[in-house]
Image (cartoon, rainbow, N blue to C red; front, top):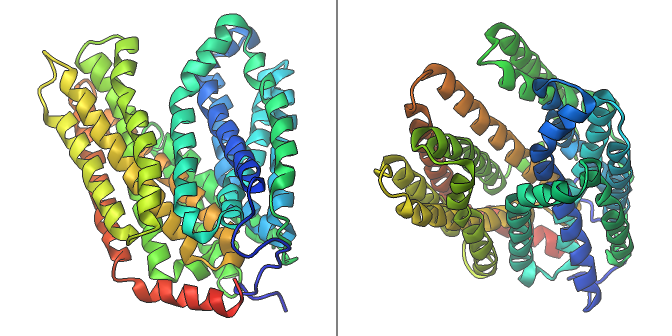
Length: 474
């Protein structure tokens, strides 16, 4: 009989976090690894033109450098989370960092586009282990009273690295050829591995992972992402892929529904507080991505600004997110997360609504305030929502909770991108599409905030989880 999902995970470290200064080194290794994965997704975008020129491929083909990486991330998040619960969080996390670093060397040495795309896919597999298990490890690194703040600082690092990615990539390309974008990961990855020795040695439960379930999971996400991307331009093929995704999902749920610790965390999704956090995350990240696509088009095509000016007016968003995330993290340790998430969703919706309806043709200055409001709301939402997902799960299922966090984010971002693609196709030849997109993004953010209010009456879920943890000595 496989171990129960609620079986306590053996832990050779103190029950409530690591002692100082080991805690700082362990947390730094987790955050540095996550930043490395996020940066690598952001800096490659700006390198596509020189890579296409060097390798002699069409610009459209070079997009696979981005798609391959993102596809591997979304496919592998849940299997890597399950592998971490089976073999141990630190072991699989370190393996992910090692795989990511080795694949970075493969990217730097790539002589052809297929080689580079394959190396990027392997990078994504390693990155999935980092993203799925990094937040779960923080639960063992920090005492529970500081976990919200820790998740907040992690959100700050992600927001800043995502915003700074294109600038860092441009700076590297100004002094070196594109392979150095990937080569710089090698020494950083080695340093992260060394610091990772300070992470807690949380033993795995030696659960068996079903290969067919892993294949169905991969089929679902691959067909979903690729079908959604081509649906506006190729409705027939896109619809067929989405049907394949639905069939794979049905097969996956039926196969895993009888298991005590399923690959898709159905056990956690039965808890209303966790389920509502996942839904709210998908909605808010869909709004965030839709606005991220709409705003550059609105500024450059609709308002006639150049790319550099447009970029400057978007900077307040990540900066405000970086300010709000640690604040909301500390508040989440002291008050109900549902109210914080609802306020964050409301602010995000307000900022995007103002950006959509305000007459900016003659003066863009108000947009700085709108972006700051949006970014602050996004930061206020994200940290407590992630904390709620993590803390609702028993400690033995922290890996599954972390994997579901990443999955919800990527599904939401994919949905936001598809929404904007559909709007551009439906409102072809009109500059109304970006402003409509901002309004849709605001509605999604508001919906995410309203769904978060369902955390508030879910007190029984939290009490059950706490009682279970206490009974198991966790």
